[in-house]
Length: 339
Image (cartoon, one colour):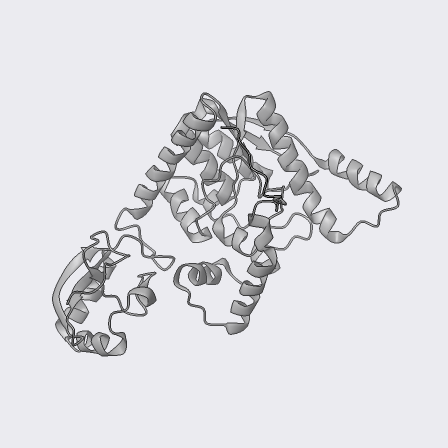
């Protein structure tokens, strides 16, 4: 009796036989006959070492399992996706992923904005850099517009200009400082006690309003630049940076976004640029309280060493889940007859 269909390997007729510490992100879901069959396989020293060598090059040993739990018909198969722990793009996965996203962007614009421009808010960090580069590859540089939106003096704005110059795209700088100050001043003069959270989120919402103003004036569609890691724990502003018309990176972790950046041949300085909160000077990871590497591993493998961090991530996700959902609409159960 053969095992169930493998969800991890390119060849769908077999199952990936990886160790718990391997790079197979679906190990727990496709584990064969728990410890018994694994131990039987592990005891075969030749196959064990072959499996470890194959993993180095993006392959794994796949097997069939008999009714008694014994391993039979071991053969190699290329791993389709190996999760956050993969350090080398040996199997071309990220090249394939890049091409898929590029085609997805083209198809989306064909359906939702033929001839329109991609409007991308440029911070000079990995996310906006990768999104802009993907749009350039999908639409051509003449259909991508970068918008730089500093709030007053921004020390690292040079990185945003570097990206625009690297991609050779048209760009505009629109400083939002006066607008933020004006809104906060009007709130204060109206007798509203302004919360710290308001001061944090308001600039993000004004930036998104600015992007849509540019979009409507320049025949555009606004790109969302959020990634899965940030969105999962709610590290985004609703109707601010979480908004947009299309989202190329919304299902990708920070690690995966960086790998795409290297695949796109972006400058390392932009890919590895540490995001810093412009208000308090802390890094994103300082604000979150855990490294993205820990979060990415948890998202892709379900594994995490620090249970306190796991509890924190789970709580953040639960509390902020509404940010990624559509606005609730009361349904009176009246039919719409229009076609």
